[in-house]
Length: 313
Ligand code: DON
Image 1 (cartoon, rainbow, N blue to C red):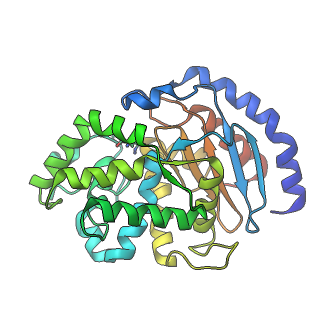
Image 2 (image 1 turned 180 degrees about the horizontal axis):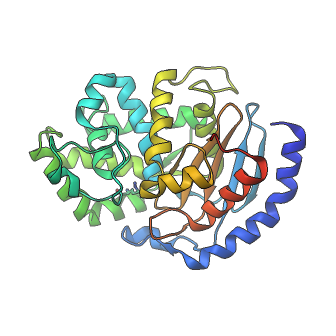
């Protein structure tokens, strides 16, 4: 991070957090997973990390939250590493849907009935089935190990209350998974696949964990702090392209215009984004807009991107 920019961000962040936080009242905390409704609506935190793991943090950056859909970027990468592109893109497409993240509309409407992309729920459930391993326990532990490596945090773990809360109430995801099985996208036990999916959605992180994961993507798969290659460059390229086209659900076009960075959000209010070649960024703000993105987090990222001219476009 260039020193003048770091100093400026550090100085300005507290007041920007305060301004962006005011937008939280306009949003709603996700409640369709009952445990998530306990999240503090007004919270807002950010961590920006550079290639030396120097961080600038502000607000509620120590607040733990579950990754939810942010995990889908990294399970996609693991599925690519386990199976290669041909297998993965035999099960999911490469196109945005324009529909809600949990829609199953196009699974019936458009043949051959495979999910449009790996970041909507149907696509991520299909991806969970492709993780290598003998059964859901081994598959899940491989995902957790991979995420621990990417965050450089050995104590990363599940929030089991959120896991159980989702598993007990996931009628829509369950029906979607059965439809996928009927469409020959999933094989074997639907419950086993869903266990892997609910588990990776329930991995608990802080903004700095997200920033470190994003940093690896910002440096094309190499952890710039350790110098270790964790992901092949081609798979980072695929993941970042999906983040631009589908990462913010059916608000990805708007985010590309207003912020202009690859990003992925989750219904717990997290947003992972990056300035390629420079910073990894983690944000959390549990109050969501109607499309399911953190309302205050979006405002904060728009402010930062404009001020520092971060848009790639
Ligand atoms: O499957 C669900 O509904 C959640 N575990 C994740 C949803 C989410 O974060 C938004 N997804 N694109």
